[in-house]
Amino acid sequence: MSPAPLTGELLELGTATLYEASGIDCALDPRVRPAWAGARVAGPAFPVVARPADNLPLHRALELAAPGEVLVVQAGGAPHGYWGEVLAVAARRRGIAGLVIDGGVRDTERLAAIGFPAFSRWIAVHRTGKDDPGRLGEPTVIGGVPVARGDMVVADADGVVILPAAQVDATVRRSRERVAKEEHFLERIRAGESTMDLYGFRR
Image (cartoon, rainbow, N blue to C red; front, side, top):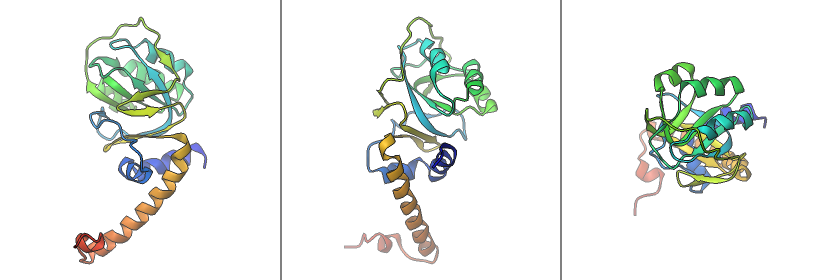
């Protein structure tokens, strides 16, 4: 499947379904949340490691990440404004799909107006330095989940999941099966059946 239909289907399936279908601990710390209501993104990961309170690696990443990739930034959970309107506009120009950062962002109203999807642990105005080059494109861990370049990032109102590249196809297949099963159950629930019976919870 080409990237655009795949990312579209991943967004349609949603993070909750993908997480359950994956069978692995692929969900980031739930404190990493959308920076604005309605933000959502899916695409291959471009990992970035930034020193706390230094956003130079994010500027550098915009020159190295490929169009369609999602910047996945390990910033140590520090409450600083690593990302705002200027970087979002630059990212849009480069074709970067979105941002997931274990750190902070700011200019959230402008990010929403631009339509740039950003997910962060904090909304924070505190300034950052631009001194340390960081590490780009190397495997890291963010929000308790390992990430390597090319792993699939999906983020929406329910949270953020990172699917290892080798498990994406199987997870999508199981997700489709899960959705079909749930739609069948929903029809039966609307017809009056009990979830206790449907799921076999009675002893």
